Length: 303
Image (cartoon, rainbow, N blue to C red; front, side, top):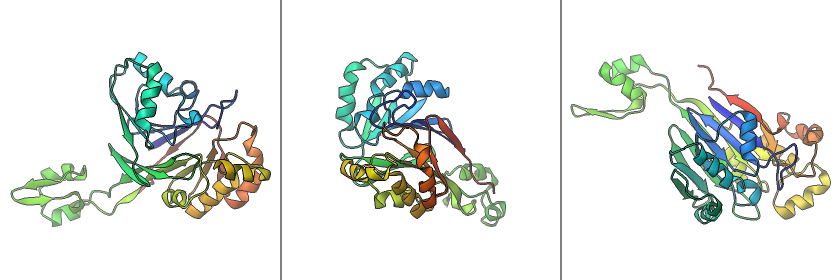
């Protein structure tokens, strides 16, 4: 199961009813934060979740509405007596940007490691889940992210018996371990059936429509894209500033054949994004104008 919560859905500046961009995922005791705009700490408090157990923070890019909440978040983690290391992932320049922001958040009681993304796409593996960063098309270097949990096949007793695998090794092989014993190598595929469908969330803001979004969204259980503008006359502005219209996000969702689309990262001038859903849903019916705190639990399919 993956818990997904859009902590903030605003773009450019926080509003009285809308915090700036942030998404939080929780899986198997791990917490991943994507972007950390101003107000993210308050949004976490409103949700009832704590910043202390955040293991990884991913940044799409370094515009202020996506990273300005980081110094305060780090200080709060430190004040909560956190000692576990924190990993940050983001575009080239991450280390320099974080070091500059830490001028107002010095002396933390935990280590911070910065990993800068290289190339068009890059995968990161952590404790049973995978993060893929993929380059998009914004006014500065910017990445989208897919978060995936793969699922192995079920244990196949008959397969294990027919291969004469010692019973004492079954449990270890089920957990993915490769075992060498008495000159024989045993691998997990010798006791497991076909892989089962896992879980996947794809998230992207601040971009024009690109092929990389469609390609990386294929197979996602939930697609979260920016819907900066809904008004038809805002298309020239979207193109100029490298942002996306709501109907453009719907086209991506339709092309990628995802089951559900959440819109986020609204312009401050958009007071009621749901007003535009009528036309957008003609392109992709399962489109939702997300609000701060929108949450879902993604569950593995039953066998």
